[in-house]
Length: 367
Image 1 (tube, helix red, strand yellow):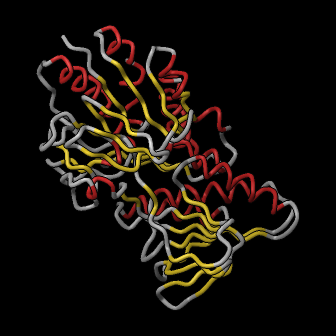
Image 2 (tube, one colour):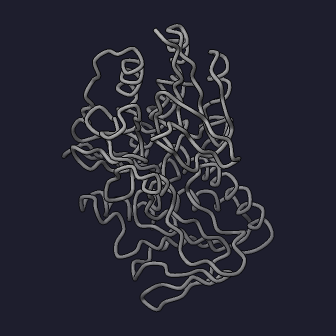
């Protein structure tokens, strides 16, 4: 069989099993190249905990370059900016063009940005996760010298987790500090009432001020303007609002879903270009919309690994089953969590302990 070239665009959660199995592809005679923006990939599920100083950066990251190169693969530290599916070419920010026989996308998503004017040095996004460590360092540094106000924007799980962990971080300072959570029209609005009320109770207990009067329109230096007409001053802003895939799928003429994600069928495969696959936040699953949560990327792992190998070898593909309800756990800082699965819910330290155990087990598997 002719030697073929598999390219993994992005080193996210959905590619973990495939990257760990690069040696399998190599043993079959295929070349494997992984493109990623960093030598490490940070696990998003533990990002808020790193912000709150519960974890060190080394505890929540995977050594991508080492994993790839130790198995005979090629790692390119770069960012994907486009794809030419007709020519089977992947275009990178550096100008490099990578040819492929089979391509899999796991390029994640980016945070929606408001109108920003003036100094943006203290505005951070929750993605990439590395930005949260930079935020932690700078918030702690300023809080040792003066009062600090941190505004977290976003009423979803990311906003709630970030706000709670910032509140924990600022307990270590000598000066007074304020943490605002601007939750749009409602905190955790898409979740059951019990999850909303329990999360609100934990956050407010530890000093987070929750505001729900509108969405952020613009940031001018340290002034936040909301569509309700209200304003607020903040020393730091952390954006944890909605996320969307990169626009390069649409620009390439590939079919996409409502959010711009690469449309894939039940095999996690592009219907028009069967040599293209994808997983994680950057795809739109044709059979049913999937929430932008890491659990689906983790579930996609073994299917992507099998299907990439099967396509290269000319074997049968496997269907991806998203599964039923997933275990929902929030880390709200101070060792407090909220856990829910169907009708069952617990909160407090036990919920956090369960999340911490699951996350550390996942890390051990791939570190």
